View 1 (cartoon, rainbow, N blue to C red):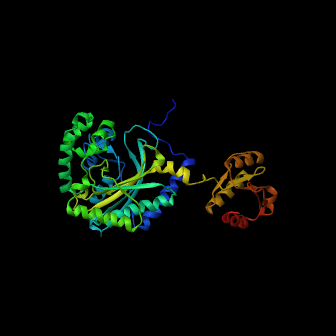
View 2: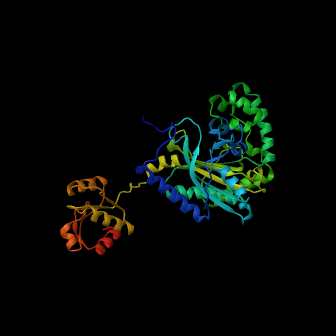
View 3: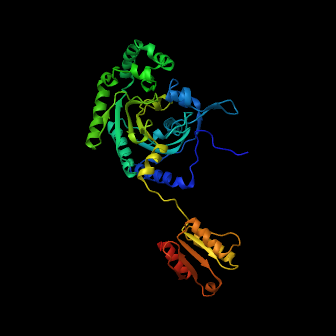
Length: 416
């Protein structure tokens, strides 16, 4: 029986993985400059963790989350996003006892049962950061600055930075009441999901993509008009931070994000290069989530970047050559063991090597070396061994010669 990967899952092949590694390396460099430390959390979590944080009435929880019972009957889930797990780890391991701010970044797979399409898979990968312990809008601005620097490193241009404020509990409650009244008059054109959401959480309707619901949202009250004094001050200060860093942005009052835990600042980074799936990064502030999970009141903020969408963008902007073995050790006659010994010695000196492991003619070995795309072939020959030298040939330039073992090591290390 021949097996294939499940729908919405993909293999990342050796010819592709170097671009993934490059993106991850650039992310780590940027994050560590800002004193972020890597954190790794389990892929499988208690399902209640996400129901409580993301919101039971969100599309992620209602339609997309992979949920199942383990052998002890516990309801567990494959993580659909990274923030909730990091917050759980922050509380469980008492990291709040350390000096603030605490800064973490993560890189890993997430899972959502969505319709697979360009840039969207059921197993997908995110690069994300979380900051705990600082309430200042300067942190919000710094997060967007980090996103900008990261994309600059990847030579990704023509990005749009859209921001909004969702306010605190007080002003959001007032806004929900007004939004409920407004949408109640248009309930007949809402889809069945949004009719139900109207009673539970009318903010979720702002995320709906159904055309009739989009029509119902014309001329809706804007949440920025309902911000309390403190939230308005925070939002204006956040904009001042962006202005001071020369980051262009648009205020988009309809951004609410698909997760219930956000407060105050939310933002999205979009591009026209990806069609309908145009968001490449998103995030915001979640000042109540740590307390909701049983930790001390702790302001927090973060963002996540979709790796698959970055790969689509970087395919055009970043050139990464697939890594090939630098040296092929071949042999003439019956010197297979001597060739294997030389290959082992070169590897012990941190030189990438490919070699033959079975009897073969020198001609067939050279053909194989050419197929591998190696640059240098080193040939172990009987006459050369008597003189303690090795033949070498540069497959790219045609240059060839002889070298002692010491000379060979120096030549290969220098990349000649």
